[in-house]
Image 1 (cartoon, helix red, strand yellow):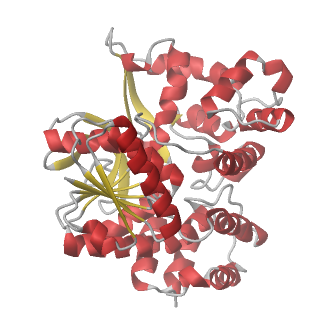
Image 2 (tube, rainbow, N blue to C red; image 1 turned 90 degrees about the vertical axis):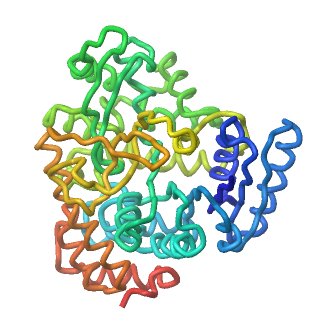
Length: 455
Protein backbone atom coordinates (compact mmCIF):
# COMPACT_ATOMS: atom_id res chain seq x y z
CA UNK A 1 0.00 0.00 0.00
CA UNK A 2 1.13 3.57 -0.64
CA UNK A 3 0.16 6.91 0.91
CA UNK A 4 1.30 10.15 -0.76
CA UNK A 5 1.61 13.20 1.53
CA UNK A 6 1.52 16.53 -0.32
CA UNK A 7 2.92 19.38 1.77
CA UNK A 8 5.05 16.95 3.79
CA UNK A 9 7.90 19.46 4.10
CA UNK A 10 5.83 21.33 6.67
CA UNK A 11 7.06 20.04 10.02
CA UNK A 12 3.67 20.55 11.65
CA UNK A 13 1.77 18.59 8.98
CA UNK A 14 4.52 16.14 8.03
CA UNK A 15 5.53 15.07 11.54
CA UNK A 16 1.97 15.00 12.85
CA UNK A 17 0.65 12.91 9.97
CA UNK A 18 3.60 10.53 10.08
CA UNK A 19 2.99 9.97 13.79
CA UNK A 20 -0.67 9.29 13.09
CA UNK A 21 0.19 6.71 10.43
CA UNK A 22 3.00 5.07 12.40
CA UNK A 23 0.72 4.21 15.32
CA UNK A 24 -1.56 2.17 13.04
CA UNK A 25 -1.20 -1.60 12.85
CA UNK A 26 -3.66 -1.87 9.97
CA UNK A 27 -1.46 0.34 7.77
CA UNK A 28 1.72 -1.62 8.62
CA UNK A 29 3.94 -2.23 5.59
CA UNK A 30 2.84 0.96 3.84
CA UNK A 31 5.16 3.13 1.77
CA UNK A 32 4.76 6.80 2.66
CA UNK A 33 5.76 9.10 -0.20
CA UNK A 34 6.64 12.55 1.08
CA UNK A 35 6.14 15.29 -1.51
CA UNK A 36 6.95 19.00 -1.22
CA UNK A 37 8.34 21.71 -3.49
CA UNK A 38 10.80 22.72 -0.74
CA UNK A 39 13.56 20.14 -1.11
CA UNK A 40 15.47 21.31 1.97
CA UNK A 41 12.60 20.95 4.43
CA UNK A 42 11.50 17.75 2.69
CA UNK A 43 14.93 16.18 3.20
CA UNK A 44 14.84 17.08 6.91
CA UNK A 45 11.43 15.47 7.40
CA UNK A 46 12.55 12.33 5.56
CA UNK A 47 15.75 12.03 7.60
CA UNK A 48 13.87 12.40 10.89
CA UNK A 49 11.17 9.97 9.77
CA UNK A 50 13.72 7.31 8.82
CA UNK A 51 15.49 7.73 12.15
CA UNK A 52 12.18 7.41 13.99
CA UNK A 53 11.30 4.24 12.06
CA UNK A 54 14.68 2.71 12.86
CA UNK A 55 14.57 3.72 16.52
CA UNK A 56 11.07 2.30 17.04
CA UNK A 57 11.46 -0.70 14.69
CA UNK A 58 8.36 0.27 12.71
CA UNK A 59 7.09 -1.66 9.64
CA UNK A 60 7.02 1.37 7.32
CA UNK A 61 9.14 2.82 4.52
CA UNK A 62 9.51 6.49 3.64
CA UNK A 63 10.46 8.03 0.31
CA UNK A 64 10.71 11.72 -0.64
CA UNK A 65 10.35 13.55 -3.93
CA UNK A 66 9.66 16.99 -5.36
CA UNK A 67 7.88 15.34 -8.29
CA UNK A 68 4.13 15.06 -7.83
CA UNK A 69 3.98 12.45 -10.61
CA UNK A 70 6.46 10.21 -8.83
CA UNK A 71 4.67 10.61 -5.50
CA UNK A 72 1.35 9.59 -7.10
CA UNK A 73 2.60 6.42 -8.81
CA UNK A 74 0.56 3.50 -7.41
CA UNK A 75 -0.83 5.64 -4.58
CA UNK A 76 -3.84 4.22 -2.75
CA UNK A 77 -4.37 7.30 -0.60
CA UNK A 78 -3.35 10.94 -1.09
CA UNK A 79 -3.31 13.47 1.74
CA UNK A 80 -3.05 17.16 0.82
CA UNK A 81 -2.15 19.95 3.22
CA UNK A 82 -0.53 22.79 1.32
CA UNK A 83 -0.28 26.57 1.38
CA UNK A 84 1.15 28.97 -1.17
CA UNK A 85 3.53 31.84 -0.49
CA UNK A 86 4.12 33.26 2.97
CA UNK A 87 1.02 32.17 4.83
CA UNK A 88 0.79 34.96 7.38
CA UNK A 89 1.90 37.80 5.10
CA UNK A 90 -0.83 36.85 2.64
CA UNK A 91 -3.35 36.30 5.44
CA UNK A 92 -2.65 39.79 6.77
CA UNK A 93 -3.29 41.13 3.28
CA UNK A 94 -6.52 39.14 2.93
CA UNK A 95 -7.74 40.43 6.28
CA UNK A 96 -6.64 44.06 6.30
CA UNK A 97 -6.95 45.33 2.73
CA UNK A 98 -10.74 44.73 2.53
CA UNK A 99 -11.11 46.48 5.89
CA UNK A 100 -9.25 49.49 4.49
CA UNK A 101 -11.95 49.67 1.82
CA UNK A 102 -14.69 49.67 4.44
CA UNK A 103 -15.66 45.99 4.44
CA UNK A 104 -16.42 44.68 7.92
CA UNK A 105 -14.82 41.25 7.88
CA UNK A 106 -13.72 39.83 11.22
CA UNK A 107 -11.07 37.28 10.22
CA UNK A 108 -10.35 36.72 6.53
CA UNK A 109 -9.14 33.10 6.28
CA UNK A 110 -12.11 31.12 4.96
CA UNK A 111 -15.05 33.46 4.39
CA UNK A 112 -15.61 37.07 3.41
CA UNK A 113 -13.39 38.74 0.79
CA UNK A 114 -10.23 37.45 2.48
CA UNK A 115 -11.40 33.86 2.36
CA UNK A 116 -12.28 34.25 -1.31
CA UNK A 117 -8.80 35.50 -2.24
CA UNK A 118 -7.31 32.68 -0.16
CA UNK A 119 -9.42 30.26 -2.21
CA UNK A 120 -8.39 31.88 -5.51
CA UNK A 121 -4.73 31.33 -4.60
CA UNK A 122 -4.78 27.82 -3.22
CA UNK A 123 -7.34 25.99 -5.36
CA UNK A 124 -5.34 26.11 -8.66
CA UNK A 125 -2.33 24.15 -7.26
CA UNK A 126 -4.72 21.66 -5.64
CA UNK A 127 -6.43 21.24 -9.01
CA UNK A 128 -2.99 20.58 -10.51
CA UNK A 129 -2.45 17.80 -7.96
CA UNK A 130 -5.90 16.42 -8.77
CA UNK A 131 -5.11 16.45 -12.47
CA UNK A 132 -2.20 14.15 -11.73
CA UNK A 133 -4.38 11.95 -9.52
CA UNK A 134 -6.98 11.70 -12.27
CA UNK A 135 -4.32 10.56 -14.73
CA UNK A 136 -1.97 8.47 -12.57
CA UNK A 137 -4.01 6.98 -9.70
CA UNK A 138 -7.71 7.66 -10.40
CA UNK A 139 -8.89 5.09 -7.87
CA UNK A 140 -7.03 6.69 -4.97
CA UNK A 141 -8.98 8.22 -2.09
CA UNK A 142 -7.94 11.82 -1.55
CA UNK A 143 -8.06 13.69 1.77
CA UNK A 144 -7.63 17.46 1.91
CA UNK A 145 -6.73 19.45 5.02
CA UNK A 146 -6.17 22.80 3.32
CA UNK A 147 -8.47 25.79 3.78
CA UNK A 148 -10.84 27.31 2.72
CA UNK A 149 -12.20 23.78 2.75
CA UNK A 150 -15.76 24.28 1.48
CA UNK A 151 -14.50 26.31 -1.49
CA UNK A 152 -11.79 23.74 -2.27
CA UNK A 153 -13.99 20.64 -2.09
CA UNK A 154 -16.82 22.32 -4.02
CA UNK A 155 -14.50 23.41 -6.83
CA UNK A 156 -12.47 20.20 -7.10
CA UNK A 157 -15.60 18.07 -7.35
CA UNK A 158 -17.10 20.44 -9.91
CA UNK A 159 -14.11 19.75 -12.16
CA UNK A 160 -13.54 16.11 -11.15
CA UNK A 161 -17.01 14.82 -10.15
CA UNK A 162 -15.91 11.17 -9.94
CA UNK A 163 -12.88 11.75 -7.74
CA UNK A 164 -12.98 10.31 -4.23
CA UNK A 165 -12.08 13.68 -2.70
CA UNK A 166 -12.86 14.26 0.99
CA UNK A 167 -12.24 17.35 3.10
CA UNK A 168 -11.07 16.69 6.66
CA UNK A 169 -11.10 19.31 9.45
CA UNK A 170 -10.16 18.99 13.12
CA UNK A 171 -12.55 21.76 14.26
CA UNK A 172 -15.09 19.16 15.40
CA UNK A 173 -12.61 18.21 18.13
CA UNK A 174 -13.55 21.41 19.98
CA UNK A 175 -16.59 19.54 21.33
CA UNK A 176 -14.27 17.15 23.15
CA UNK A 177 -12.58 20.07 24.92
CA UNK A 178 -15.67 21.42 26.65
CA UNK A 179 -18.70 19.10 26.51
CA UNK A 180 -17.38 16.63 29.14
CA UNK A 181 -17.04 19.51 31.61
CA UNK A 182 -20.42 21.00 30.74
CA UNK A 183 -22.20 17.64 31.00
CA UNK A 184 -20.06 16.18 33.81
CA UNK A 185 -19.43 12.92 31.96
CA UNK A 186 -16.70 11.27 29.90
CA UNK A 187 -16.64 12.21 26.22
CA UNK A 188 -16.88 8.50 25.40
CA UNK A 189 -20.32 8.51 27.04
CA UNK A 190 -21.71 11.01 24.53
CA UNK A 191 -23.33 10.31 21.19
CA UNK A 192 -23.08 13.48 19.06
CA UNK A 193 -23.94 14.51 15.53
CA UNK A 194 -23.15 17.84 13.90
CA UNK A 195 -23.62 19.23 10.41
CA UNK A 196 -23.37 22.39 8.33
CA UNK A 197 -20.62 23.92 6.19
CA UNK A 198 -16.98 23.72 7.21
CA UNK A 199 -16.29 26.17 10.08
CA UNK A 200 -19.99 27.07 9.92
CA UNK A 201 -21.66 24.14 11.65
CA UNK A 202 -23.82 23.32 14.68
CA UNK A 203 -24.28 20.42 17.06
CA UNK A 204 -27.61 18.84 16.09
CA UNK A 205 -27.95 15.79 18.33
CA UNK A 206 -26.54 14.92 21.76
CA UNK A 207 -27.40 12.05 24.07
CA UNK A 208 -25.88 10.03 26.92
CA UNK A 209 -24.84 6.54 25.86
CA UNK A 210 -25.23 4.96 29.29
CA UNK A 211 -28.83 6.12 29.81
CA UNK A 212 -29.96 6.88 26.27
CA UNK A 213 -31.32 10.23 27.48
CA UNK A 214 -31.16 13.38 25.40
CA UNK A 215 -28.34 15.71 26.53
CA UNK A 216 -29.23 18.85 24.59
CA UNK A 217 -31.40 20.41 27.30
CA UNK A 218 -28.47 20.02 29.70
CA UNK A 219 -26.17 21.69 27.16
CA UNK A 220 -28.54 24.63 26.66
CA UNK A 221 -28.95 25.05 30.40
CA UNK A 222 -25.31 24.70 31.47
CA UNK A 223 -23.34 26.11 28.51
CA UNK A 224 -23.90 29.82 29.37
CA UNK A 225 -22.23 29.54 32.78
CA UNK A 226 -19.40 27.44 31.37
CA UNK A 227 -18.51 29.81 28.56
CA UNK A 228 -18.95 32.87 30.76
CA UNK A 229 -16.14 31.59 33.00
CA UNK A 230 -13.93 29.69 30.54
CA UNK A 231 -10.54 31.33 29.85
CA UNK A 232 -10.29 32.80 26.36
CA UNK A 233 -7.41 33.65 24.06
CA UNK A 234 -7.11 37.11 25.60
CA UNK A 235 -6.37 35.36 28.91
CA UNK A 236 -3.88 33.02 27.22
CA UNK A 237 -2.08 35.94 25.61
CA UNK A 238 -1.97 37.85 28.90
CA UNK A 239 -0.43 34.80 30.57
CA UNK A 240 2.07 34.31 27.74
CA UNK A 241 3.16 37.95 27.72
CA UNK A 242 3.56 38.14 31.49
CA UNK A 243 5.39 34.85 31.94
CA UNK A 244 7.32 34.90 28.67
CA UNK A 245 6.49 31.23 28.16
CA UNK A 246 4.20 29.27 25.91
CA UNK A 247 2.37 26.29 27.44
CA UNK A 248 2.84 22.89 25.86
CA UNK A 249 -0.73 22.89 24.58
CA UNK A 250 -3.73 25.22 24.45
CA UNK A 251 -5.52 22.88 26.83
CA UNK A 252 -2.74 23.05 29.42
CA UNK A 253 -2.83 26.85 29.58
CA UNK A 254 -6.61 26.85 29.92
CA UNK A 255 -6.36 24.41 32.79
CA UNK A 256 -3.72 26.61 34.42
CA UNK A 257 -5.80 29.74 33.94
CA UNK A 258 -8.88 28.06 35.36
CA UNK A 259 -6.92 27.47 38.57
CA UNK A 260 -5.38 30.97 38.58
CA UNK A 261 -8.22 32.94 37.02
CA UNK A 262 -8.04 35.98 39.28
CA UNK A 263 -4.44 36.68 38.34
CA UNK A 264 -4.73 36.53 34.55
CA UNK A 265 -8.44 36.96 33.82
CA UNK A 266 -9.38 39.55 31.21
CA UNK A 267 -12.71 40.88 32.47
CA UNK A 268 -14.97 40.11 29.53
CA UNK A 269 -17.74 37.52 29.55
CA UNK A 270 -18.03 34.86 26.83
CA UNK A 271 -14.54 35.68 25.55
CA UNK A 272 -13.99 34.52 21.95
CA UNK A 273 -17.68 33.59 21.82
CA UNK A 274 -19.99 36.61 21.94
CA UNK A 275 -21.21 35.79 18.41
CA UNK A 276 -21.30 32.11 19.42
CA UNK A 277 -23.59 33.17 22.31
CA UNK A 278 -25.98 34.95 19.95
CA UNK A 279 -26.25 31.84 17.75
CA UNK A 280 -26.99 29.69 20.80
CA UNK A 281 -29.55 32.16 22.15
CA UNK A 282 -31.30 33.09 18.89
CA UNK A 283 -31.07 29.82 16.93
CA UNK A 284 -31.08 27.48 19.95
CA UNK A 285 -28.15 25.32 18.76
CA UNK A 286 -24.52 25.11 19.86
CA UNK A 287 -21.98 26.16 17.22
CA UNK A 288 -18.94 23.96 16.64
CA UNK A 289 -16.47 26.82 16.33
CA UNK A 290 -15.80 30.24 17.87
CA UNK A 291 -16.35 33.81 16.70
CA UNK A 292 -13.34 33.98 14.38
CA UNK A 293 -14.69 31.39 11.95
CA UNK A 294 -18.43 31.99 12.45
CA UNK A 295 -17.99 35.70 11.85
CA UNK A 296 -16.55 35.10 8.39
CA UNK A 297 -19.95 34.15 6.99
CA UNK A 298 -22.50 36.36 8.75
CA UNK A 299 -23.17 39.97 7.79
CA UNK A 300 -24.09 41.18 11.29
CA UNK A 301 -21.17 39.40 12.96
CA UNK A 302 -19.04 42.56 13.05
CA UNK A 303 -21.45 44.13 15.51
CA UNK A 304 -21.40 41.32 18.07
CA UNK A 305 -18.26 39.18 17.58
CA UNK A 306 -15.46 39.36 20.13
CA UNK A 307 -13.04 41.29 17.93
CA UNK A 308 -10.35 41.57 20.61
CA UNK A 309 -10.56 37.83 21.27
CA UNK A 310 -10.21 37.14 17.54
CA UNK A 311 -7.12 39.34 17.25
CA UNK A 312 -5.65 37.77 20.40
CA UNK A 313 -6.26 34.27 19.00
CA UNK A 314 -4.48 35.28 15.76
CA UNK A 315 -1.52 36.62 17.76
CA UNK A 316 -1.39 33.46 19.90
CA UNK A 317 -1.65 31.22 16.83
CA UNK A 318 1.21 32.97 15.03
CA UNK A 319 3.36 32.94 18.16
CA UNK A 320 2.69 29.29 18.91
CA UNK A 321 3.58 28.17 15.38
CA UNK A 322 6.80 30.18 15.45
CA UNK A 323 8.01 28.84 18.81
CA UNK A 324 6.84 25.23 19.06
CA UNK A 325 9.03 22.50 17.65
CA UNK A 326 6.88 19.71 16.17
CA UNK A 327 8.06 16.14 16.58
CA UNK A 328 6.96 12.68 15.48
CA UNK A 329 4.92 10.91 18.15
CA UNK A 330 3.13 7.57 18.14
CA UNK A 331 -0.09 9.37 18.89
CA UNK A 332 -3.31 9.92 16.94
CA UNK A 333 -3.83 13.64 16.26
CA UNK A 334 -6.15 13.67 13.25
CA UNK A 335 -8.97 11.41 12.04
CA UNK A 336 -7.68 10.60 8.57
CA UNK A 337 -5.97 7.39 9.73
CA UNK A 338 -9.18 5.86 11.20
CA UNK A 339 -10.95 6.73 7.94
CA UNK A 340 -8.26 4.99 5.87
CA UNK A 341 -8.42 1.99 8.22
CA UNK A 342 -12.22 1.96 7.91
CA UNK A 343 -11.98 1.88 4.11
CA UNK A 344 -9.39 -0.92 4.18
CA UNK A 345 -11.38 -3.07 6.63
CA UNK A 346 -14.85 -2.08 5.34
CA UNK A 347 -15.71 -1.31 8.97
CA UNK A 348 -18.86 0.78 8.51
CA UNK A 349 -17.96 2.91 11.55
CA UNK A 350 -19.42 6.40 11.90
CA UNK A 351 -16.94 9.22 11.32
CA UNK A 352 -17.98 12.47 13.01
CA UNK A 353 -17.24 14.91 10.17
CA UNK A 354 -16.29 14.73 6.50
CA UNK A 355 -16.65 17.34 3.78
CA UNK A 356 -18.38 15.88 0.73
CA UNK A 357 -20.92 17.00 -1.89
CA UNK A 358 -24.34 17.53 -0.39
CA UNK A 359 -26.56 15.08 -2.30
CA UNK A 360 -29.50 15.84 -0.03
CA UNK A 361 -27.73 15.45 3.32
CA UNK A 362 -28.90 18.97 4.23
CA UNK A 363 -32.07 19.22 2.11
CA UNK A 364 -32.30 23.02 1.97
CA UNK A 365 -28.85 23.41 0.39
CA UNK A 366 -27.93 22.77 -3.26
CA UNK A 367 -26.48 19.40 -4.24
CA UNK A 368 -23.31 20.95 -5.68
CA UNK A 369 -22.14 22.50 -2.39
CA UNK A 370 -19.71 20.63 -0.14
CA UNK A 371 -21.25 20.10 3.29
CA UNK A 372 -19.69 18.88 6.53
CA UNK A 373 -21.65 15.90 7.85
CA UNK A 374 -20.99 12.64 9.71
CA UNK A 375 -20.61 9.57 7.51
CA UNK A 376 -20.22 5.82 7.68
CA UNK A 377 -16.96 4.46 6.29
CA UNK A 378 -16.90 1.49 3.91
CA UNK A 379 -14.62 -0.12 1.35
CA UNK A 380 -16.72 1.61 -1.30
CA UNK A 381 -16.07 5.01 0.30
CA UNK A 382 -17.83 7.38 2.69
CA UNK A 383 -21.62 7.56 2.93
CA UNK A 384 -22.95 10.81 4.34
CA UNK A 385 -25.71 10.79 6.96
CA UNK A 386 -28.79 12.90 6.05
CA UNK A 387 -30.53 15.43 8.31
CA UNK A 388 -34.03 15.71 6.92
CA UNK A 389 -35.16 17.99 9.74
CA UNK A 390 -32.20 20.36 9.73
CA UNK A 391 -33.14 23.55 11.67
CA UNK A 392 -34.62 26.05 9.23
CA UNK A 393 -33.10 29.11 10.86
CA UNK A 394 -29.48 28.02 10.74
CA UNK A 395 -30.04 26.35 7.37
CA UNK A 396 -31.05 29.77 6.06
CA UNK A 397 -27.78 31.26 7.33
CA UNK A 398 -25.91 28.52 5.45
CA UNK A 399 -27.96 29.06 2.30
CA UNK A 400 -27.13 32.78 2.35
CA UNK A 401 -23.49 31.89 1.71
CA UNK A 402 -23.80 29.13 -0.91
CA UNK A 403 -23.91 31.57 -3.84
CA UNK A 404 -20.48 32.88 -2.83
CA UNK A 405 -19.01 29.39 -3.18
CA UNK A 406 -20.74 28.86 -6.52
CA UNK A 407 -19.23 32.04 -7.99
CA UNK A 408 -15.83 31.45 -6.38
CA UNK A 409 -15.65 28.05 -8.07
CA UNK A 410 -16.54 29.63 -11.40
CA UNK A 411 -13.89 32.34 -10.90
CA UNK A 412 -11.22 29.69 -10.33
CA UNK A 413 -12.30 27.44 -13.19
CA UNK A 414 -12.78 30.23 -15.76
CA UNK A 415 -10.30 32.86 -14.53
CA UNK A 416 -12.94 35.57 -15.02
CA UNK A 417 -12.67 38.66 -12.85
CA UNK A 418 -16.40 39.33 -13.25
CA UNK A 419 -17.16 36.28 -11.13
CA UNK A 420 -14.96 37.67 -8.33
CA UNK A 421 -16.92 40.93 -8.38
CA UNK A 422 -20.22 39.06 -8.37
CA UNK A 423 -19.09 36.73 -5.58
CA UNK A 424 -18.29 39.76 -3.44
CA UNK A 425 -21.60 41.45 -4.21
CA UNK A 426 -23.60 38.41 -3.07
CA UNK A 427 -21.41 37.92 0.01
CA UNK A 428 -23.35 38.69 3.25
CA UNK A 429 -20.20 40.22 4.75
CA UNK A 430 -19.80 42.86 2.02
CA UNK A 431 -21.72 46.02 2.81
CA UNK A 432 -20.64 48.48 0.08
CA UNK A 433 -20.06 48.63 -3.64
CA UNK A 434 -18.49 52.03 -4.41
CA UNK A 435 -14.82 51.02 -4.19
CA UNK A 436 -15.21 47.28 -4.58
CA UNK A 437 -13.53 46.99 -7.98
CA UNK A 438 -10.67 49.16 -6.76
CA UNK A 439 -10.18 46.76 -3.86
CA UNK A 440 -10.23 43.75 -6.20
CA UNK A 441 -7.67 45.36 -8.50
CA UNK A 442 -5.39 46.07 -5.55
CA UNK A 443 -5.60 42.46 -4.35
CA UNK A 444 -4.96 41.12 -7.85
CA UNK A 445 -1.90 43.38 -8.14
CA UNK A 446 -0.53 42.63 -4.68
CA UNK A 447 -0.97 38.87 -5.20
CA UNK A 448 -0.18 38.76 -8.91
CA UNK A 449 2.24 35.84 -8.45
CA UNK A 450 -0.70 33.59 -7.54
CA UNK A 451 -3.66 35.41 -9.13
CA UNK A 452 -2.19 36.23 -12.52
CA UNK A 453 -4.61 33.79 -14.17
CA UNK A 454 -7.55 36.09 -13.34
CA UNK A 455 -8.48 38.36 -16.27
